[in-house]
Length: 190
Length: 118
Image (cartoon, rainbow over all chains, first blue to last red; front, side, top):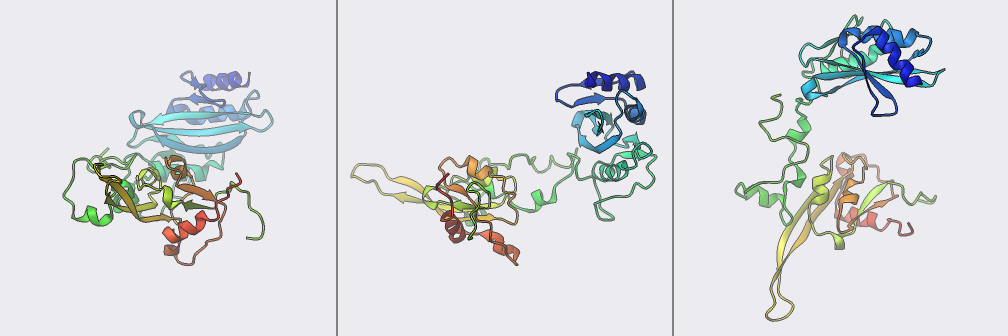
């Protein structure tokens, strides 16, 4: 019942809403231009009354661009939904929720610095955690982790090898690669 | 420690050197890249005449940098030879970050604190 109510209210705000019920908390996909309208509707509608803003963040959806997600919750109805929208990798912008939930300000500043997503209408979109002058958006897939480049992988050695063997050895067939770290030259290009 | 700690608490990691084959699996699976292993090959003569000589890996260095370790326990899970164990021993703070890299003597000492009553 509650999932239907949440979805119905989102549908009323934007006919393009679709629901992903893979998890217990439903995820409502909406177009970026309806982002603020759907949040307002879920907050104000008597059947949903999601007046608690839990969090807002994003993730790198690779081919689909960047996904912005926020979780809204109703304390009295004990239900909630995750709203999600996709924006392009370059110059992706979504409306700011600061006018709907003042507490969204910090979340949007963090999402801005970590992913480079703009929040239209945010009163003060400064970096929150990163030092001044920091270049890049660390939570994007193409961001090169300095610590994974600066340090040699301890697992590169084969059983029976030591650092000294590696130093003098000619480059051998195929060295084991660290899992999850792309080959050098293919990383950071994306 | 005078007070008893929960036997399964994840305080530190001990190495049972006799079981380690220097296979590198723990070092490769470690998400933090904080396990360092050096080893060399030695040829063991055949036990009886006519047998074949065997090549074995001999451990030279095994170190865990607890400044990087996030206590996920993947190294312990992944070890096929049961050479790594959780110890409840947590009391090894150091004023020098290098002091958190535990080499074989410390890992051996930690092994002595591993609870066998699980």
